[in-house]
Image (cartoon, rainbow, N blue to C red):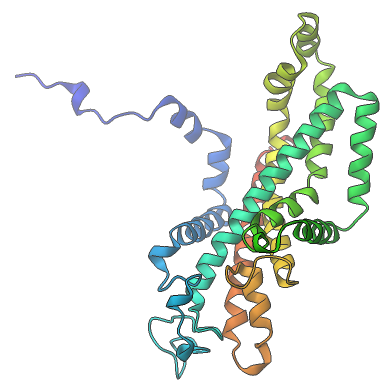
Length: 316
């Protein structure tokens, strides 16, 4: 009786997975305790934020679930704390753990969307400026210089204020997240534009681009299929690092009162609300959102620093 060895042998990983497991990036990741710890914490933050309805004791955005009789309860391990309000409640009877989980989701979505929009604007401007040069390059880069001459937070405040005034009053709270995304993106696209422009200038003088031009390949195809892939590495590293900065910018705007409304609080809004009761004894209303925000930004920056080092050919 013969045995089919092919059926008994374990399945081998796919070629793409095998290449990834054998890559320098994976080796560097598995040999960096800081990167692995940051990735594990970041994964926990993402899972708890995305699946907040499954982890949170209540929906903090539903006014029907708020109980004013349970307002300003301390954390459950302190005298006066009650279960299931693990981290206590705020002045509206809103469970702090639920508010933090939902607020983290809003902050992460706004940060990710603003980075994606600024990437789109910056990469488009950088590709066009670097490839065509001349008046177009000077015009786009001078706009970038003007943007850089104004502090980022002031640009975000200006854009957010102007757009809010242009919107009808009944749409201001509904479109608050979109306004924040636009404000943050318009204040942070220049870095991507400059990076992509420098890479494009280098790539456009190479033979494969010259050959494509001689063959009358359309400029948009040259940019999309030949030049753009060669500019992605430094841009993606910058985007990873700027993700944490975008979250901080959103938190700053919300703390100043021009971000997310109190009915749909982000981490910045929670900190602004809790700051009013910092010296009244209800320290947990501001402390736990601050810890969550710091933890989120730190792990993103650690991952960004690791990615920058591993993709830097000078450090290999």
